[in-house]
Amino acid sequence: ENRKRAMARKVSQALGGSLRGKTVAVLGLTFKPDTDDMRDAPSIPLITGLIDMGAKVKAFDPVGMEQAKGELPSITYCEDAYSCAEGADAIVIVTEWVQFRALDLDRLKAIMAQPVIVDLRNIYRPEEMQAAGFVYESVGRSKEQSSA
Figure 1 (tube, one colour):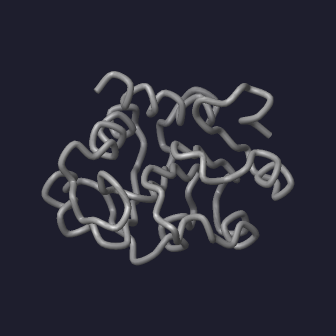
Figure 2: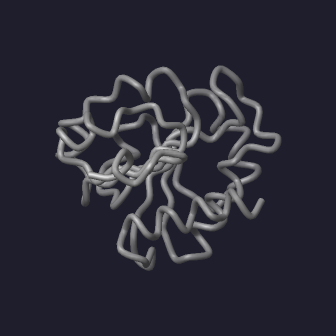
């Protein structure tokens, strides 16, 4: 639980230390890809932490949104990853759905308020994200590997 809330702090740090008035797009709500299982899903304490820190949260999951609504009723649910990212100050990748590995980075950068991605599943290579112009944070990598 504390580790998951620490992820909310990681998002805050990526956005300069404050989430007040910021919009965070969360991609992936379920415990793991290819399921609608929300039991012990890391998205729940993460999103709770983001809201507690003042963020507005939008979310998209390919199959888990109906189940998530019972656990997380106060967030905005989106129809796809791009509508979720629109106007967001940061994207947080929580579940490693295959469709999140193939996002159009140029399109994301064009529709986001700030090009910040916090990748909690390390599905992208830091050098690829840096080349695409993103501020990129990942987990368990050295600082040189994880930021732009």
